Each structure stands twice: as C-alpha cells, then as structure tokens.
Length: 409
Image 1 (cartoon, rainbow, N blue to C red):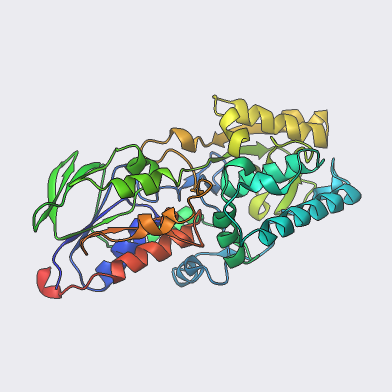
Image 2: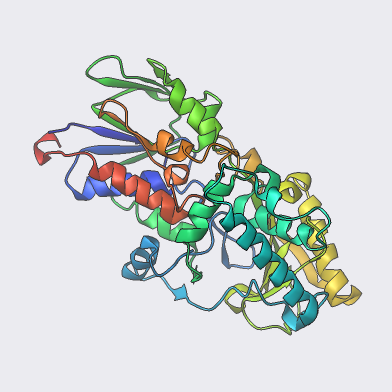
C-alpha cells in the first residue's frame, strides 16, 4: 500500500503518470515549473485565431498511438490526411526525376544502415558518402527526425525507432498540445513550482521546491534530460548513473516558424514544399494546415541551431518560399510566431537522441530506484522516443508500477 505520490514535470509523461494514479484512486500531486502544463506539447492561438502546435504536432504511428483514442474520446477532431512530406507541391524547385533520385538515395542509406545493425554502434553519417549529391538532403531529414545531424545520431538508437514506427501521421485540428493538457483535467496540479532537490535518504521523500518542501512516499520524475544532466534537479544520495544516462540522451532541436498568408491560396490543405532539397539547411514547409491561411515552416538540427537569433528563421523561411513561388509573394507573408526550444527554461531542446555507443542509456534512465523513485519521459522509451506517445507510455507504466489505497486520500 502506497501513500502520496508526487509527479515532477507536467509534460505528456507526467500528465499520463498523474492521470493513471488519479484514476486508480491514488493520492497524487503533479508539480510543474512553468506556468502552464504540456511541456513540449504546446498549442498556441495565433493572431489569425487559429491554434497551432509549437511543440509536437503529429500523431506519429497514429493507429497505435494512445493519444489518438484519447483525443477521439474527448471529442477532438482528427485529420487523417497525409502530411505529404514526400510530395513537392507543383514540383517547384524539385522536379519529379530529382525527387525520385533523392528517394532512391535515402533508401540506399537506410538499407546500408539496417545491414550494419549486428555490428558495433556507429554514427548514421557512416552510411552515406561525403560525395553523395543527396547527402545534404539526408542530413536535413536527420535534422527534422532526430533534431541532430547524421554524425551525432546512434545507429542502434535510430533503428529501434524506425523498426517500430508506422507511416500513419495524423493531426489534431484543436492542437496536439490541447489534447495533452486536457488529459490532466481534475488531476491535482500545482504550476509555477520548480523542484530542485530530492532527498530520498529517509522513509519519507522530501522534495525541495521553489514553494517549499513537499513530502511524498513515491516520486515520479518526468523532466527533460538536460534538467538531470546539468544538475538542475539533484538527488540525496546522489544518482550519478541517472545523470550519466541523461547526458547520453541530449535533446536535439526542431523549431517552427508560422507565417500568415494574404490573398487566395493556390494549393490544397496540407500541401508541402521542401525549401531547397540540395541543402542540409532548409525548411520543411507545411502549406495551409487544415486549409488555413498559414504556413508552418519546420527547421531541425544544426540548421535550427544556426537560425535562433530573433527573426532569422522567419526571414530564412520567407526567402525560401519566395525563391520557389516568386517575388510577388513576399508581401503576402507576415511572420506571426516562432519557437526557440533550445532557450526554453528547464527544457532546453526538442526531443532526445542517443549519443553514439549509448543506445542503452534509455533503459538505464528508465529504471526505478529502491521502488520509490521512478523515471518517465520520451527519453525513457526504447522505441518511441522523441514522441508524445512514447512519453505517455512511460508515464503510464510508471503510474501502474505503484499500488495505492483510497484510504490514503
């Protein structure tokens, strides 16, 4: 029989853990350092009135993604149309023969990487030649998918995700972040409370926070890896193995720019353009999500890192679009929003990738300590890391690991 559980971190994993415990009749408190829930799942209303996702925006592997059923049961609207990532609208700047050649190059890269799985871990950059004309495009894709360049990403980690993922990627009209936050309804929550130290020496765990000390019998830690790796949340006695595992799972970066579009739109909803398929620094442009007069431009990896200064990403996105659509379009674009996840306090990035040789760090980070400290988050998922559903599954598992009695409430 357990007493009170405190969940630290109000992102998808923390919410899933707290929801699981609350629905089981357990005494639980969810604390979150920010003034909002959701973490890297953040839906924001634009000046146009439309809701966009600053963080996770696609129900990846949607058919098996638990957030799909959660969204449907809560009455949210799921758009099952393709994101069209493999389609270049009107073949602008990327004719069909070049698109086909690019796809064939990526398939060769993927086949070479998968064929090496039985050997030692290696960086993904080993599987595409420096002289391959499509290496920049493959590196750009790594930036979108991993938040990091090919040279930074572990083969064994990448393959675990690729072998588990499916190609159904759907979107929520009201916002993925809206769904995640809604899942915390009626769960006891305190926002604006930053945990800094967990004292687990005695029978009662004491959590030092910006709002004072909170006592608990169990704690579920669901924070981004930089919080642990950089010692922003410490433990007494120390847990160096957790800090080392978190450091081996850094957060890559993926950022978005949102533009409003004035005037009639020539493309259908969910059309897509790759800005420059011959460069490793290019945006993936989502044209008119749900038919709205908005463009969502997505940058990843080193390209996103290079465009973090105020206005730089928006200017880059507009230049790419004008180069494809024509100079008359420049006056039709107005920047209305942008993200800079690297600079978000107590987050520090977008989603995790394992350093080369450290794919096993996910299991080491996820393991419980003394049956009293549990860890959750997308970085703890062996196959669905970098996703909100991976975070959900680890949070739910952590919550299910505890047993409680309503007598404790």
